[in-house]
Length: 300
Image 1 (cartoon, rainbow, N blue to C red):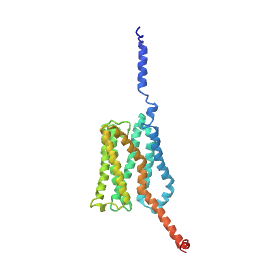
Image 2: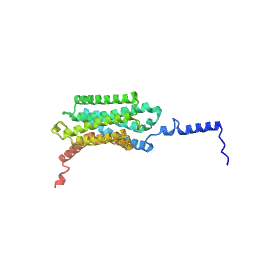
Image 3: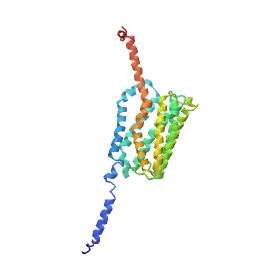
Image 4: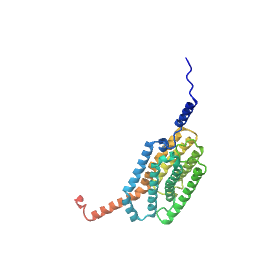
């Protein structure tokens, strides 16, 4: 048998160019424009975040009336901050594709920083406010609380901005899983939060528990956040060690955090405030009807 014909030089060049084009997708391809996690992940994340915003919007008129009636500066501030965080979180969930689009890298990092700062400010300020001995109300107490949370959140944003824009650490790029600085930063971040909630639980079961607010909902919140941050710390440690399960576990915790944390916080701290007003109104209506003799027939 004869040898196969040797391809000409132009044919080899054309074949080489074709292989190069096929091995590296263009920058404007669907792969780069799509979400790193997939369309279903983005849809689920966005729908759950949107449901909470719709819930807030459905009760907006009623809640505003209650806030005006009670005139609690603390609840007004936290309700506005909750709305701010919910809208930012919904925007972040809907724009997941930005982290896979090279032209949107800076915009995605800025959006992620602002979104995280809003949620973190809400989380820290609530805990700081409830840990004060006088946590009833007042502008002075509220200003003191937000000054503390503002300093902490400001330092956190500055540190992460230096990592992202100064040292080019892909903190918010889920597709980047092998960067050691990324997991080192998130491990440190989760360690601080875990130690904070762990310290509150330690004080609760010590002789200094009288210094803490006598609210069962507050301790339930602390227990849940301690467990969540402990699991996130474990996921970051596994990811930093190169364990594949750590990447998936941290992504799952992030999904739960962005879809469940704000509703959980609303139910724990703000839901009772708005529900309490309904109970007071029901009791008032019942008293008026009882005084008017509507229930006299029940006793005959």
